[in-house]
Length: 267
Length: 247
Ligand SMILES: Nc1ncnc2c1ncn2[C@@H]1O[C@H](COP(=O)(O)OP(=O)(O)OP(=O)(O)O)[C@@H](O)[C@H]1O
Ligand SMILES: [Mg+2]
Image (cartoon, rainbow over all chains, first blue to last red):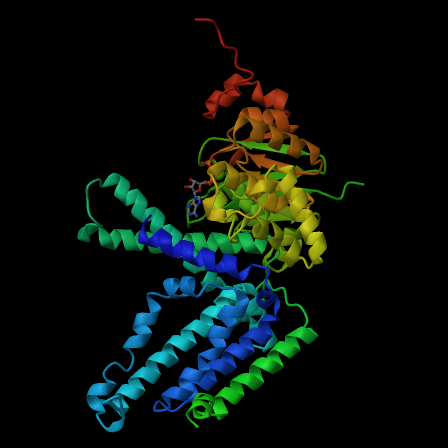
Protein backbone atom coordinates (compact mmCIF):
# COMPACT_ATOMS: atom_id res chain seq x y z
CA UNK A 1 0.00 0.00 0.00
CA UNK A 2 1.27 3.46 -0.82
CA UNK A 3 2.20 6.04 1.80
CA UNK A 4 -0.68 8.21 0.70
CA UNK A 5 -3.38 5.61 1.10
CA UNK A 6 -1.81 4.75 4.46
CA UNK A 7 -2.26 8.33 5.56
CA UNK A 8 -5.88 8.38 4.45
CA UNK A 9 -6.39 5.12 6.22
CA UNK A 10 -5.02 6.30 9.54
CA UNK A 11 -7.29 9.33 9.47
CA UNK A 12 -10.17 6.92 8.90
CA UNK A 13 -8.97 4.77 11.80
CA UNK A 14 -8.88 7.76 14.13
CA UNK A 15 -12.40 8.64 13.13
CA UNK A 16 -13.47 5.08 13.81
CA UNK A 17 -11.98 5.29 17.31
CA UNK A 18 -13.80 8.55 17.90
CA UNK A 19 -17.10 6.92 17.00
CA UNK A 20 -16.71 4.10 19.48
CA UNK A 21 -19.08 3.97 22.39
CA UNK A 22 -16.85 4.02 25.50
CA UNK A 23 -17.43 6.08 28.63
CA UNK A 24 -14.74 8.55 27.59
CA UNK A 25 -16.35 8.91 24.16
CA UNK A 26 -19.65 9.60 25.88
CA UNK A 27 -18.31 12.46 28.01
CA UNK A 28 -19.65 15.71 26.63
CA UNK A 29 -17.38 17.10 23.88
CA UNK A 30 -17.40 20.56 25.42
CA UNK A 31 -16.11 19.16 28.71
CA UNK A 32 -13.34 17.23 26.97
CA UNK A 33 -12.42 20.24 24.88
CA UNK A 34 -12.22 22.55 27.90
CA UNK A 35 -10.21 20.05 29.95
CA UNK A 36 -7.80 19.59 27.06
CA UNK A 37 -7.42 23.34 26.63
CA UNK A 38 -6.83 23.79 30.36
CA UNK A 39 -4.25 21.02 30.25
CA UNK A 40 -2.42 22.61 27.33
CA UNK A 41 -2.33 25.99 29.07
CA UNK A 42 -1.09 24.50 32.34
CA UNK A 43 1.62 22.42 30.67
CA UNK A 44 2.88 25.33 28.63
CA UNK A 45 2.81 27.63 31.65
CA UNK A 46 5.55 25.72 33.51
CA UNK A 47 8.88 27.54 33.50
CA UNK A 48 11.25 25.43 31.36
CA UNK A 49 13.60 24.76 34.24
CA UNK A 50 10.92 22.93 36.26
CA UNK A 51 11.28 19.56 34.60
CA UNK A 52 9.81 17.61 37.52
CA UNK A 53 6.64 19.73 37.44
CA UNK A 54 6.20 19.08 33.73
CA UNK A 55 6.85 15.38 34.24
CA UNK A 56 4.10 15.24 36.86
CA UNK A 57 1.67 16.55 34.24
CA UNK A 58 2.25 13.31 32.33
CA UNK A 59 -0.01 11.65 34.88
CA UNK A 60 -3.08 12.96 33.10
CA UNK A 61 -2.55 11.44 29.63
CA UNK A 62 -1.15 8.22 31.04
CA UNK A 63 -4.06 7.77 33.41
CA UNK A 64 -6.52 8.49 30.62
CA UNK A 65 -4.82 6.00 28.31
CA UNK A 66 -4.91 3.47 31.11
CA UNK A 67 -8.57 3.84 32.06
CA UNK A 68 -9.98 4.54 28.59
CA UNK A 69 -8.45 1.40 27.14
CA UNK A 70 -6.94 3.31 24.21
CA UNK A 71 -3.74 1.71 23.04
CA UNK A 72 -0.70 3.79 23.94
CA UNK A 73 1.41 1.92 21.41
CA UNK A 74 -1.03 2.71 18.61
CA UNK A 75 -0.89 6.34 19.64
CA UNK A 76 2.90 6.38 19.50
CA UNK A 77 2.77 4.65 16.13
CA UNK A 78 0.27 7.13 14.70
CA UNK A 79 2.20 10.07 16.07
CA UNK A 80 5.56 8.71 14.93
CA UNK A 81 6.02 11.55 12.49
CA UNK A 82 4.92 14.36 14.78
CA UNK A 83 6.70 13.33 17.96
CA UNK A 84 10.30 13.52 16.66
CA UNK A 85 9.55 16.95 15.23
CA UNK A 86 8.23 18.09 18.59
CA UNK A 87 11.35 16.69 20.24
CA UNK A 88 13.58 18.74 17.96
CA UNK A 89 12.39 21.90 19.70
CA UNK A 90 14.98 22.85 22.25
CA UNK A 91 17.55 20.34 21.05
CA UNK A 92 20.17 23.08 20.88
CA UNK A 93 19.56 24.39 24.37
CA UNK A 94 22.29 22.29 26.02
CA UNK A 95 24.88 23.91 23.75
CA UNK A 96 23.86 27.45 24.55
CA UNK A 97 23.06 27.14 28.20
CA UNK A 98 25.85 25.35 30.05
CA UNK A 99 25.17 26.62 33.54
CA UNK A 100 25.60 23.73 35.95
CA UNK A 101 22.50 22.95 38.00
CA UNK A 102 23.08 19.68 39.74
CA UNK A 103 25.14 16.53 39.63
CA UNK A 104 23.50 13.12 39.56
CA UNK A 105 25.74 10.08 40.07
CA UNK A 106 28.69 12.13 39.00
CA UNK A 107 27.05 13.37 35.80
CA UNK A 108 26.73 17.12 35.61
CA UNK A 109 23.35 18.35 34.46
CA UNK A 110 23.31 21.82 32.94
CA UNK A 111 20.25 24.03 32.90
CA UNK A 112 20.33 23.77 29.10
CA UNK A 113 19.82 20.02 29.33
CA UNK A 114 16.99 20.50 31.75
CA UNK A 115 15.20 23.05 29.59
CA UNK A 116 15.66 20.84 26.52
CA UNK A 117 14.16 17.88 28.30
CA UNK A 118 11.26 19.89 29.66
CA UNK A 119 10.52 21.37 26.24
CA UNK A 120 10.52 17.87 24.76
CA UNK A 121 8.25 16.54 27.47
CA UNK A 122 5.94 19.53 27.05
CA UNK A 123 5.75 18.91 23.31
CA UNK A 124 5.04 15.21 23.69
CA UNK A 125 2.41 15.83 26.36
CA UNK A 126 0.54 18.44 24.36
CA UNK A 127 0.49 16.14 21.33
CA UNK A 128 -0.66 13.18 23.40
CA UNK A 129 -3.45 15.10 25.07
CA UNK A 130 -4.68 16.43 21.73
CA UNK A 131 -4.57 12.89 20.39
CA UNK A 132 -6.68 11.75 23.35
CA UNK A 133 -9.26 14.38 22.49
CA UNK A 134 -9.39 13.51 18.80
CA UNK A 135 -9.41 9.76 19.39
CA UNK A 136 -12.41 9.97 21.70
CA UNK A 137 -14.41 12.79 20.12
CA UNK A 138 -15.65 13.03 16.54
CA UNK A 139 -14.78 16.11 14.54
CA UNK A 140 -18.48 16.93 14.38
CA UNK A 141 -18.76 16.89 18.17
CA UNK A 142 -15.67 19.04 18.56
CA UNK A 143 -17.25 21.48 16.15
CA UNK A 144 -20.44 21.34 18.21
CA UNK A 145 -18.44 22.19 21.31
CA UNK A 146 -16.77 25.07 19.49
CA UNK A 147 -20.19 26.37 18.55
CA UNK A 148 -21.26 26.18 22.20
CA UNK A 149 -18.28 28.39 23.00
CA UNK A 150 -19.79 30.87 20.51
CA UNK A 151 -17.01 30.50 17.97
CA UNK A 152 -18.62 31.94 14.80
CA UNK A 153 -20.44 29.34 12.68
CA UNK A 154 -18.48 30.19 9.57
CA UNK A 155 -15.17 29.39 11.27
CA UNK A 156 -16.48 26.13 12.68
CA UNK A 157 -17.87 25.08 9.30
CA UNK A 158 -14.54 25.93 7.73
CA UNK A 159 -12.76 23.73 10.27
CA UNK A 160 -15.22 20.88 9.71
CA UNK A 161 -14.83 21.04 5.95
CA UNK A 162 -11.05 21.20 6.12
CA UNK A 163 -11.04 18.04 8.21
CA UNK A 164 -13.20 16.33 5.65
CA UNK A 165 -11.26 17.59 2.65
CA UNK A 166 -7.92 16.38 3.94
CA UNK A 167 -9.17 12.86 3.29
CA UNK A 168 -10.47 13.90 -0.11
CA UNK A 169 -7.11 15.35 -1.04
CA UNK A 170 -5.27 12.24 0.13
CA UNK A 171 -7.63 9.89 -1.71
CA UNK A 172 -7.38 11.98 -4.84
CA UNK A 173 -3.59 12.00 -4.61
CA UNK A 174 -3.69 8.25 -4.17
CA UNK A 175 -5.80 7.79 -7.28
CA UNK A 176 -3.65 10.09 -9.41
CA UNK A 177 -0.41 8.41 -8.39
CA UNK A 178 -1.87 4.95 -8.87
CA UNK A 179 -3.11 5.72 -12.32
CA UNK A 180 0.28 7.25 -13.09
CA UNK A 181 2.11 4.19 -11.82
CA UNK A 182 -0.06 1.89 -13.91
CA UNK A 183 0.90 3.73 -17.05
CA UNK A 184 4.54 4.19 -16.17
CA UNK A 185 5.63 0.68 -15.30
CA UNK A 186 9.09 0.11 -13.94
CA UNK A 187 9.50 3.74 -12.98
CA UNK A 188 10.52 4.67 -9.46
CA UNK A 189 8.53 7.61 -8.15
CA UNK A 190 7.23 10.26 -10.48
CA UNK A 191 9.30 11.81 -13.25
CA UNK A 192 10.30 15.39 -12.46
CA UNK A 193 8.77 16.79 -15.65
CA UNK A 194 5.35 15.34 -14.84
CA UNK A 195 5.21 16.94 -11.41
CA UNK A 196 3.77 20.21 -12.64
CA UNK A 197 0.78 18.83 -14.54
CA UNK A 198 0.23 16.17 -11.90
CA UNK A 199 0.05 18.60 -9.01
CA UNK A 200 -2.07 21.03 -11.02
CA UNK A 201 -4.39 18.18 -11.93
CA UNK A 202 -4.50 17.08 -8.33
CA UNK A 203 -5.51 20.55 -7.15
CA UNK A 204 -8.24 20.92 -9.75
CA UNK A 205 -9.57 17.46 -9.05
CA UNK A 206 -9.61 17.90 -5.30
CA UNK A 207 -11.30 21.26 -5.67
CA UNK A 208 -13.94 19.72 -7.90
CA UNK A 209 -14.40 16.80 -5.56
CA UNK A 210 -14.54 19.08 -2.53
CA UNK A 211 -17.18 21.19 -4.25
CA UNK A 212 -19.19 18.12 -5.20
CA UNK A 213 -18.99 16.73 -1.65
CA UNK A 214 -20.09 20.05 -0.26
CA UNK A 215 -23.01 19.97 -2.68
CA UNK A 216 -23.84 16.45 -1.63
CA UNK A 217 -23.90 17.61 2.01
CA UNK A 218 -26.15 20.55 1.12
CA UNK A 219 -28.54 18.25 -0.73
CA UNK A 220 -28.99 16.31 2.47
CA UNK A 221 -29.88 19.21 4.70
CA UNK A 222 -26.49 20.68 5.62
CA UNK A 223 -26.51 24.45 6.06
CA UNK A 224 -23.62 26.78 6.77
CA UNK A 225 -25.46 28.55 9.52
CA UNK A 226 -26.48 25.33 11.18
CA UNK A 227 -23.61 22.91 10.81
CA UNK A 228 -24.10 19.21 11.22
CA UNK A 229 -23.78 18.99 14.95
CA UNK A 230 -25.34 16.68 17.41
CA UNK A 231 -24.85 18.53 20.62
CA UNK A 232 -26.37 16.82 23.60
CA UNK A 233 -26.85 18.47 26.96
CA UNK A 234 -24.31 18.29 29.75
CA UNK A 235 -25.10 15.61 32.34
CA UNK A 236 -24.12 15.24 35.99
CA UNK A 237 -21.44 12.72 35.00
CA UNK A 238 -19.95 15.27 32.63
CA UNK A 239 -19.84 17.90 35.35
CA UNK A 240 -18.29 15.43 37.75
CA UNK A 241 -15.62 14.49 35.23
CA UNK A 242 -14.99 18.16 34.55
CA UNK A 243 -14.64 19.01 38.24
CA UNK A 244 -12.30 16.09 38.96
CA UNK A 245 -10.06 16.76 35.96
CA UNK A 246 -9.82 20.49 36.55
CA UNK A 247 -9.03 20.24 40.24
CA UNK A 248 -6.52 17.44 39.67
CA UNK A 249 -4.78 19.34 36.88
CA UNK A 250 -4.65 22.59 38.82
CA UNK A 251 -3.31 20.72 41.85
CA UNK A 252 -0.60 19.17 39.66
CA UNK A 253 0.30 22.63 38.44
CA UNK A 254 0.39 24.33 41.84
CA UNK A 255 1.92 21.69 44.09
CA UNK A 256 5.29 20.14 43.30
CA UNK A 257 3.72 16.68 43.41
CA UNK A 258 6.76 14.67 42.33
CA UNK A 259 8.99 16.46 44.84
CA UNK A 260 6.46 15.87 47.60
CA UNK A 261 6.18 12.19 46.79
CA UNK A 262 9.96 11.96 46.50
CA UNK A 263 10.28 13.74 49.84
CA UNK A 264 8.14 11.07 51.49
CA UNK A 265 10.57 8.38 50.46
CA UNK A 266 13.73 10.27 51.29
CA UNK A 267 12.69 11.30 54.78
CA UNK B 1 -54.85 15.72 -4.69
CA UNK B 2 -51.66 15.85 -6.62
CA UNK B 3 -49.26 18.25 -4.92
CA UNK B 4 -46.02 16.70 -6.06
CA UNK B 5 -44.94 18.16 -9.35
CA UNK B 6 -42.14 19.99 -11.14
CA UNK B 7 -42.73 22.63 -13.79
CA UNK B 8 -39.97 23.76 -16.08
CA UNK B 9 -40.46 26.61 -18.51
CA UNK B 10 -38.03 28.02 -21.08
CA UNK B 11 -34.98 26.61 -19.31
CA UNK B 12 -31.61 27.33 -20.91
CA UNK B 13 -28.22 26.80 -19.36
CA UNK B 14 -24.51 26.67 -20.20
CA UNK B 15 -21.45 26.10 -18.05
CA UNK B 16 -19.41 28.53 -20.11
CA UNK B 17 -20.25 31.74 -21.91
CA UNK B 18 -21.45 31.02 -25.44
CA UNK B 19 -21.66 27.23 -25.10
CA UNK B 20 -25.29 26.35 -24.41
CA UNK B 21 -25.81 22.91 -22.89
CA UNK B 22 -29.57 23.02 -22.35
CA UNK B 23 -31.69 24.89 -24.85
CA UNK B 24 -35.11 26.25 -23.99
CA UNK B 25 -36.59 23.23 -22.25
CA UNK B 26 -40.22 23.29 -21.19
CA UNK B 27 -41.75 20.26 -19.52
CA UNK B 28 -43.85 19.31 -16.49
CA UNK B 29 -43.60 16.25 -14.25
CA UNK B 30 -46.49 15.06 -12.15
CA UNK B 31 -47.00 13.02 -9.03
CA UNK B 32 -47.29 9.60 -10.66
CA UNK B 33 -44.67 10.12 -13.33
CA UNK B 34 -41.74 7.76 -13.53
CA UNK B 35 -39.66 9.56 -16.10
CA UNK B 36 -36.81 7.92 -17.97
CA UNK B 37 -34.31 10.47 -19.24
CA UNK B 38 -32.36 9.05 -22.14
CA UNK B 39 -29.88 10.45 -24.61
CA UNK B 40 -26.33 10.03 -25.88
CA UNK B 41 -23.26 10.92 -23.81
CA UNK B 42 -23.07 14.65 -23.27
CA UNK B 43 -26.73 15.21 -24.19
CA UNK B 44 -27.24 17.16 -20.97
CA UNK B 45 -29.09 14.65 -18.79
CA UNK B 46 -26.94 15.10 -15.69
CA UNK B 47 -26.91 18.86 -16.15
CA UNK B 48 -30.68 18.87 -16.35
CA UNK B 49 -31.01 16.90 -13.09
CA UNK B 50 -28.50 19.17 -11.37
CA UNK B 51 -30.54 22.21 -12.29
CA UNK B 52 -33.65 20.62 -10.78
CA UNK B 53 -32.03 20.48 -7.32
CA UNK B 54 -30.27 23.80 -7.76
CA UNK B 55 -26.73 22.43 -7.94
CA UNK B 56 -26.38 24.79 -10.88
CA UNK B 57 -28.28 28.03 -10.67
CA UNK B 58 -27.18 30.27 -13.49
CA UNK B 59 -29.83 29.11 -15.94
CA UNK B 60 -32.49 31.28 -17.54
CA UNK B 61 -36.15 30.33 -17.52
CA UNK B 62 -37.93 28.90 -14.52
CA UNK B 63 -38.02 25.70 -12.50
CA UNK B 64 -40.70 25.28 -9.87
CA UNK B 65 -40.77 22.33 -7.51
CA UNK B 66 -44.20 22.04 -5.92
CA UNK B 67 -44.75 25.73 -6.72
CA UNK B 68 -41.46 26.76 -5.10
CA UNK B 69 -39.14 28.45 -7.59
CA UNK B 70 -35.65 26.93 -7.44
CA UNK B 71 -33.49 29.87 -6.34
CA UNK B 72 -30.68 30.44 -3.94
CA UNK B 73 -32.94 31.40 -1.09
CA UNK B 74 -35.38 28.50 -1.54
CA UNK B 75 -32.77 25.79 -1.92
CA UNK B 76 -33.14 24.35 1.58
CA UNK B 77 -36.89 23.94 1.09
CA UNK B 78 -36.59 22.43 -2.37
CA UNK B 79 -33.93 19.99 -1.25
CA UNK B 80 -36.01 18.69 1.61
CA UNK B 81 -38.39 17.37 -1.01
CA UNK B 82 -35.89 15.91 -3.43
CA UNK B 83 -33.55 12.98 -3.09
CA UNK B 84 -30.75 13.12 -5.64
CA UNK B 85 -28.41 10.25 -6.44
CA UNK B 86 -25.20 11.41 -8.14
CA UNK B 87 -23.86 9.68 -11.22
CA UNK B 88 -20.54 9.27 -9.37
CA UNK B 89 -21.00 7.53 -6.00
CA UNK B 90 -17.68 8.85 -4.70
CA UNK B 91 -19.23 12.27 -4.81
CA UNK B 92 -22.30 11.16 -2.94
CA UNK B 93 -20.62 9.55 0.04
CA UNK B 94 -18.50 11.59 2.41
CA UNK B 95 -18.81 10.19 5.91
CA UNK B 96 -16.49 7.47 7.19
CA UNK B 97 -18.88 4.54 7.53
CA UNK B 98 -21.95 3.57 5.55
CA UNK B 99 -24.13 3.91 8.64
CA UNK B 100 -22.91 7.45 9.34
CA UNK B 101 -23.49 8.43 5.76
CA UNK B 102 -27.02 7.04 5.63
CA UNK B 103 -27.77 8.78 8.94
CA UNK B 104 -26.47 12.13 7.74
CA UNK B 105 -29.68 13.50 6.23
CA UNK B 106 -32.16 12.35 8.90
CA UNK B 107 -29.84 13.72 11.59
CA UNK B 108 -29.55 16.99 9.79
CA UNK B 109 -33.29 17.29 9.67
CA UNK B 110 -33.23 17.07 13.44
CA UNK B 111 -34.93 13.69 13.89
CA UNK B 112 -34.53 11.99 17.27
CA UNK B 113 -31.75 9.42 17.39
CA UNK B 114 -33.98 6.32 17.58
CA UNK B 115 -35.95 7.48 14.53
CA UNK B 116 -32.63 8.07 12.75
CA UNK B 117 -31.56 4.52 13.60
CA UNK B 118 -34.85 3.11 12.41
CA UNK B 119 -34.59 4.92 9.09
CA UNK B 120 -30.99 3.89 8.60
CA UNK B 121 -31.81 0.27 9.28
CA UNK B 122 -34.79 0.37 6.93
CA UNK B 123 -32.85 2.06 4.12
CA UNK B 124 -30.03 -0.46 4.44
CA UNK B 125 -32.48 -3.35 4.40
CA UNK B 126 -34.23 -2.00 1.33
CA UNK B 127 -31.02 -2.12 -0.68
CA UNK B 128 -29.91 -5.38 0.96
CA UNK B 129 -26.75 -4.05 2.61
CA UNK B 130 -27.27 -4.17 6.40
CA UNK B 131 -24.06 -6.21 6.60
CA UNK B 132 -22.08 -3.25 5.25
CA UNK B 133 -23.38 -0.78 7.84
CA UNK B 134 -20.12 -0.37 9.71
CA UNK B 135 -17.81 -0.76 6.77
CA UNK B 136 -15.60 2.18 5.80
CA UNK B 137 -17.02 3.89 2.74
CA UNK B 138 -13.66 3.98 0.99
CA UNK B 139 -13.42 0.18 1.26
CA UNK B 140 -16.65 -0.56 -0.63
CA UNK B 141 -16.77 -2.06 -4.10
CA UNK B 142 -18.19 0.04 -6.94
CA UNK B 143 -21.64 -1.56 -6.80
CA UNK B 144 -21.73 -1.46 -3.01
CA UNK B 145 -21.03 2.26 -3.19
CA UNK B 146 -23.95 2.67 -5.55
CA UNK B 147 -26.27 0.81 -3.19
CA UNK B 148 -25.01 2.86 -0.23
CA UNK B 149 -25.61 6.08 -2.21
CA UNK B 150 -29.17 5.01 -2.87
CA UNK B 151 -29.65 4.18 0.82
CA UNK B 152 -28.45 7.67 1.83
CA UNK B 153 -31.36 9.05 -0.18
CA UNK B 154 -33.97 6.52 0.90
CA UNK B 155 -33.34 7.44 4.55
CA UNK B 156 -34.47 10.97 3.71
CA UNK B 157 -37.89 9.68 2.58
CA UNK B 158 -38.09 12.34 -0.14
CA UNK B 159 -41.19 13.27 -2.16
CA UNK B 160 -39.26 13.18 -5.39
CA UNK B 161 -36.38 10.97 -6.52
CA UNK B 162 -33.80 12.04 -9.08
CA UNK B 163 -31.38 9.32 -10.05
CA UNK B 164 -28.40 9.70 -12.34
CA UNK B 165 -27.37 6.33 -13.76
CA UNK B 166 -28.59 4.30 -10.79
CA UNK B 167 -28.08 0.89 -12.35
CA UNK B 168 -24.42 1.34 -13.29
CA UNK B 169 -22.11 -1.14 -11.54
CA UNK B 170 -24.92 -3.28 -10.10
CA UNK B 171 -24.96 -7.03 -10.50
CA UNK B 172 -28.13 -8.58 -11.96
CA UNK B 173 -29.60 -9.40 -8.54
CA UNK B 174 -29.06 -5.94 -7.12
CA UNK B 175 -30.24 -4.36 -10.35
CA UNK B 176 -33.47 -6.32 -10.15
CA UNK B 177 -33.86 -5.31 -6.50
CA UNK B 178 -33.37 -1.66 -7.40
CA UNK B 179 -36.05 -1.94 -10.06
CA UNK B 180 -38.30 -3.37 -7.38
CA UNK B 181 -37.49 -0.53 -4.93
CA UNK B 182 -38.13 2.11 -7.57
CA UNK B 183 -41.41 0.55 -8.56
CA UNK B 184 -42.47 0.53 -4.91
CA UNK B 185 -41.71 4.24 -4.68
CA UNK B 186 -44.90 5.57 -6.19
CA UNK B 187 -44.13 9.30 -6.26
CA UNK B 188 -42.45 11.30 -8.94
CA UNK B 189 -39.06 10.01 -10.00
CA UNK B 190 -36.74 10.97 -12.81
CA UNK B 191 -34.11 8.46 -13.87
CA UNK B 192 -31.30 9.34 -16.26
CA UNK B 193 -29.81 6.21 -17.75
CA UNK B 194 -28.26 4.52 -20.73
CA UNK B 195 -29.68 1.23 -19.49
CA UNK B 196 -32.82 1.29 -21.63
CA UNK B 197 -33.99 -2.04 -20.28
CA UNK B 198 -33.84 -0.54 -16.82
CA UNK B 199 -35.88 2.43 -18.04
CA UNK B 200 -38.29 0.02 -19.66
CA UNK B 201 -38.77 -1.78 -16.35
CA UNK B 202 -39.15 1.29 -14.13
CA UNK B 203 -40.65 4.14 -16.12
CA UNK B 204 -44.05 5.09 -17.49
CA UNK B 205 -42.78 8.09 -19.42
CA UNK B 206 -39.64 8.63 -21.47
CA UNK B 207 -37.87 11.87 -22.45
CA UNK B 208 -35.34 11.61 -25.23
CA UNK B 209 -32.69 14.34 -25.13
CA UNK B 210 -30.17 15.28 -27.75
CA UNK B 211 -27.69 18.16 -27.56
CA UNK B 212 -29.61 19.92 -24.83
CA UNK B 213 -33.05 19.62 -26.36
CA UNK B 214 -36.01 17.39 -25.69
CA UNK B 215 -36.57 15.49 -28.91
CA UNK B 216 -39.40 13.23 -27.82
CA UNK B 217 -41.65 12.88 -24.80
CA UNK B 218 -43.94 9.89 -24.63
CA UNK B 219 -44.63 6.42 -23.28
CA UNK B 220 -41.89 3.79 -23.12
CA UNK B 221 -43.87 1.84 -25.67
CA UNK B 222 -43.91 4.74 -28.07
CA UNK B 223 -40.26 5.74 -27.77
CA UNK B 224 -38.26 2.67 -26.76
CA UNK B 225 -39.73 0.61 -29.60
CA UNK B 226 -39.04 3.29 -32.22
CA UNK B 227 -35.81 2.01 -33.68
CA UNK B 228 -35.53 4.79 -36.25
CA UNK B 229 -35.94 7.51 -33.63
CA UNK B 230 -33.42 5.90 -31.29
CA UNK B 231 -30.76 5.33 -33.92
CA UNK B 232 -30.92 8.87 -35.29
CA UNK B 233 -30.06 10.03 -31.77
CA UNK B 234 -27.19 7.62 -31.23
CA UNK B 235 -29.17 5.11 -29.17
CA UNK B 236 -30.29 1.54 -29.77
CA UNK B 237 -33.31 -0.56 -28.96
CA UNK B 238 -33.38 -2.03 -25.44
CA UNK B 239 -31.87 -5.53 -25.51
CA UNK B 240 -35.09 -7.11 -24.40
CA UNK B 241 -36.86 -5.59 -27.41
CA UNK B 242 -34.26 -6.06 -30.11
CA UNK B 243 -34.98 -9.21 -31.97
CA UNK B 244 -31.99 -11.46 -32.17
CA UNK B 245 -32.18 -12.93 -35.61
CA UNK B 246 -30.62 -16.32 -36.08
CA UNK B 247 -27.46 -16.00 -38.17
N1 LIG C 1 -18.62 21.30 -14.94
C1 LIG C 1 -18.67 21.41 -16.28
N2 LIG C 1 -18.04 22.42 -16.90
C2 LIG C 1 -18.09 22.55 -18.23
N3 LIG C 1 -18.76 21.72 -19.04
C3 LIG C 1 -19.43 20.69 -18.51
C4 LIG C 1 -19.41 20.48 -17.08
N4 LIG C 1 -20.14 19.38 -16.81
C5 LIG C 1 -20.59 18.94 -18.00
N5 LIG C 1 -20.17 19.71 -19.01
C6 LIG C 1 -20.50 19.54 -20.45
O1 LIG C 1 -21.90 19.61 -20.58
C7 LIG C 1 -22.35 18.67 -21.52
C8 LIG C 1 -23.50 17.87 -20.93
O2 LIG C 1 -22.99 17.10 -19.85
P1 LIG C 1 -23.89 16.13 -19.00
O3 LIG C 1 -23.04 15.63 -17.92
O4 LIG C 1 -25.13 16.85 -18.64
O5 LIG C 1 -24.21 14.99 -20.06
P2 LIG C 1 -24.98 13.62 -19.86
O6 LIG C 1 -26.12 13.63 -20.79
O7 LIG C 1 -25.25 13.39 -18.44
O8 LIG C 1 -23.88 12.61 -20.39
P3 LIG C 1 -23.51 11.12 -19.87
O9 LIG C 1 -24.50 10.22 -20.48
O10 LIG C 1 -22.17 10.90 -20.46
O11 LIG C 1 -23.53 11.14 -18.39
C9 LIG C 1 -21.17 17.84 -21.93
O12 LIG C 1 -20.77 18.25 -23.20
C10 LIG C 1 -20.10 18.17 -20.92
O13 LIG C 1 -18.85 18.21 -21.53
MG1 LIG D 1 -24.56 12.09 -17.02
